[in-house]
Amino acid sequence: MAPAGAAGVLLAVLGLLVLLSLISYDPADVSFLQVPARAAPANFIGPAGAYLAFVLLLTLGVTAYLTPVILLAQSAFLLFYRRGARWPKFCWLLLGLVSCLLLAQLHGAAWAGVSARLNLPAPGGLAGYWLGTRALIAWLGPMGAGLLAGGGLLAALLLLTELEPSAVAGAVAGAWRWTSDRATEWLAARREQNSVRDTQNELRERSNRRLKQWSEAQAEAKPSGPRVRPAVLPPDRTP
Image (tube, rainbow, N blue to C red; front, top):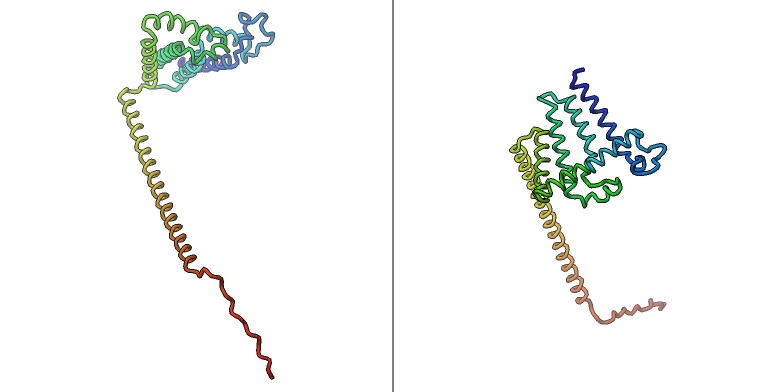
C-alpha cells in the first residue's frame, strides 16, 4: 500500500475513535470536573476517549464535533482523490474548522444550552475565546469578524470542491430559474383549477336558481282552493 493510502486508513481509524469519544462524552467521566470520577467511564473509548473528548471540547467548543468529519474527509481524499495534491486539502479543512469556530463564538447565544450541558467555557472553546472574542471581535467588531469568518468558510468550501465562483454563480442562477419556472407553472395550474372550480360552482348555482324558480312557478300554478272529490253514485239495482 502506498504511504498516502496507509495514512488515509490511519486517519479513518483516528476519525472513528474521535467520533465515538465525542458522541459518548460525559463530564462525569473526567476527574477534573467531578471528584471522584466514575469508576467505569460511560465513554465508548474508555478513560482515554473521555479525556480526549474533554480536551477537544475545551479547546474547540462545539466545533470539536467537526474534527472527526475533517479526519474522515482527509482520509477519503488520501484514499480516493487522484487529480492532484491531497495534503493541501487538509489546510482548507482546517480553514473551514477555524471559520466555523469563529461563527460559533459570534453566535454564542444560540449555543448557550449546549455549552451549559457540556460544561464549556465558551461556544468556541478556549481557541474561540482568544482568537474570536479577544482578538478579531475586539479589533474588527462583530460585523468585521463575521464577514471574515464567513469569507473563510466560503473560500474553504470552494478550495475543497475546486469549484469556480463563476460556475457556482451559474449553478445558483440555473437553480433559481428552474425554481421560478416550476413555481410559475404551479401557480398557472392552480389558477386554472380555481377557474374551473369557479365555473362549476357558477353553473351549479345557476341550475339551482332555475330549479327553484320552476318549483315556485309550479306551486303558483296549482289551485289554491280545496279539491272537491266527485260524488260516486251507487250502482242501479232495479230489476
